[in-house]
Structures are given as structure tokens and as C-alpha cells.
Image 1 (tube, rainbow, N blue to C red):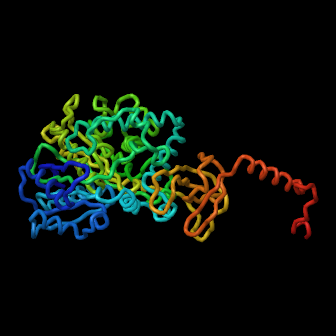
Image 2: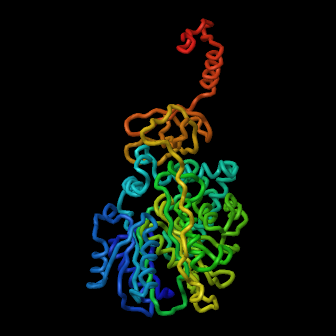
Length: 511
């Protein structure tokens, strides 16, 4: 397998743009070519999540090839939801590593801000499980439910979790303030974070990446440059939250990271900095744990100790991440790599304490269901890239799906809350505030359901469950109701009714 090098990278300014998607992609391509010794490419790989609905344009690879005046050059689009940019890069990497192409241009982008927030939210929600969408679930809602489960599992108080998430948001906005390509270039204070509105408990506005326009470009080549891609990994997981056996990690990232580390011949401790998919601030914590940087449940402590800051031992999202740089969904995976290349070359606006030699980029597709990891290294350093780089021999064990009863078995009418959220920014057709919970019924089946009110929500609380149309509703059992039920069961066992009358004999007793 040939070593694959980065010849040039480019990026547009992220944020609200008057340019079309094709124009943004053309600008990113021109920027990459201006920094590259390679000026002609053998193929074009385009990453975009959903231009059909965001812009009304289909056959996007042909549209972009024409806009770049690359008529006759093979062009293909790659889509893996919000990790499409990274997936396009990986497909292009494989084409160059195989020797089939020498030079390949990777372009990734999305045009989103011309739509209303509700319209963009609806399109983004199409990547999650349909049954969960029918209940009103959105990406922020599901991210919030994962966050609440994480808090409970690792015994974080509400106030400590809030402080950790606040520190991540403040850190990434500070990093973004140094990035000329970032959508948000102003630091925020702790007070600004804490006064921002709740989107979906416990997530606030500053916990969520913005809707963004933008594009990024990367030129890959088989000819040696100063940056090499030494490891790539790709993993998938269950689409629906109810089908998972863990709500506090993303197995797809763990698979992708294992493959990338094995291919590059390195361990997590040998990474100098990382760009991870912080579409939501708690995902930065989960990503760093899934990547092996910190033990499970310790990612938040690393943030508190300053380890992930620009001056820390392992800077995370020195570019500002999705939270501050912005998140034009199809472009993000490629943008992470472009940012990493600039930092490895010493071209980033913020300087590192020591010149970094190795970087990792992690990109998430959907709700952690299609994730990719890329490792880049300075090839002008004695890292023995050529001798170490090889494809992994076998993939790690796949995710074990949570054991569910067959679809024919109707769920019981009682259960308990596994995790929950109160959604304040709801999709069209749902009124806020909307309570959502993942309920485990008496048969062990996990079901996404709407709450009939927003009170008394807590992991472990017992609920009544009923189906209405295509979705489920739950009602939390009140303390008084639970006492009455317990008393009725006790009286039943004593063969006495609440009135003191004798119970009618059972069928078995009649026999």
C-alpha cells in the first residue's frame, strides 16, 4: 500500500454566506490549489450530507466538476450524514493508496443558513431513527438524553455537569476567536453561557453547534510532502438509541479509533492534539474517552484540570471545533483535517507549546452511527511512516445490539425511565416544552415515548406506558399512586378488597 500525503488544504470562511454551494466548493478548491505543488488531479471526491433538501441540487458531483471546469475527470459523491466530509477523504485515500490514482481532490461542503431553523432541524433529524422522530425527537434531544445518562452513570451532580459543559463551551469559543475561518470569533464568558436558553435539558444554546454554510478542500497525492495520512478507521453502530447497549459511549468511534491506531502503529498517548466532533459539548467528553485519551467517566475531569486547553497536555479542538468554527454538516470532517494540517505545518493562528508532530481527527455521522478517525503525521520527521503503515488485519468486535423482544410482542403497559430530556426547541408539529424519555418496559424492551407532563422526571422512575397512533405516551407514577398500588397488592394477597369484603375465589380455588 502506498503512503498517502497531503499536498494542499483550503477552506472558506464558515458562517452565513450569500454564495451557492457550488461557489463555496469552488472557493475551497482554489484555496487548496494555491497551497499545493499539485495543480492537476485525477479524480474528484465530494462529501455532502443532503444538498437535495438543503439547496434543491442533486447529482452534486457532476455539478461541482462542471463548476471547477474539470470536465472528463471522474467525480463521485460520498454521504455518511454529518461525517460525509471525512468519508469522502477516506474514499479518496483508498484510491491513492491502492495506486489507482496519483492525485485526488477532496471537496466537502453544505449550504444551510438560508433555511429557517425549524426547516434545517427537520432535515438534520432525518438521519435518526424514524420511530424516535415520530415522538418529536431531534438531534439535540437525543444528545441531551445521552448526556443525562452519562451524568447519572458517572455520578455527576447537576451543577458539576453544568460547570464542565460550560468550560468546554468557553474553551472552544476562545479557541475559535483566534481562527479566521470560524463562524464565531468572540470569546464567551461563564455568565454568557449560564444565561443562555435551554434547548433540551441539560443542554443550553452554547452547548449546540450552529447551522452553518461552508466548504473545505484537501488534495491527496502519492508524491511525498511534509504531511502524511498514516492511519484511517471507520466504524458503524445502531441507528436508533433504543437499539444500543450503551448510552454513554459511541462504539462506532471505538471501532474506528482501534483501526486507525493499528494502521498508524501508534497509541492514544502519542497524539499531540485532536479535532473531535463536538456538535454538542458533552460529545467532546465522550469522544475523548472513546478515543482512549481518558478513561471512561474521566473526560470531564480532564477538562476541569485544563488538560484539553491550548496550553494543556492534549489540546482538543484548538480550531474552536464545531461549536465555534461552525458545522456545515457535510464539510466538517474535511474541515477538521484542513485545520490539523495547518497546525502541523505551523500555519495556525494559535501556536502550540511544542511543534506538534501527530494529530487525530474524529468525525461523527448521525447520532454516532457512522464515525471515522484520521491520523496525520509530519513526514519530514523520523517517524518511520513507510515501514509502519499497513492496513489493519481484522476489525474489532462489532457492537452488540441490546436484546429486544420480537416485534410481534406488544410492550407492557408499565416500565421505568432509562433516560430523558425536556425539549424546549421542538420540531414542527410539537409544542414546547416536550418531555421525551427512553422507557424500559417490564419485558425489557426499550421504547421512545412522549411524556404527558414534564414533572417528576428522573432516571429509574416508574411509569405507565400506552400507545396512541404511531407513538407512545408515558405518565410518571406519583408517590401516592405507588402507595395505593402497593396497598392493593397487599390486600389482594390477603384476599380482602379495600372495602374489607371477601374476594371472590379464583378459578384455581373453584377447581
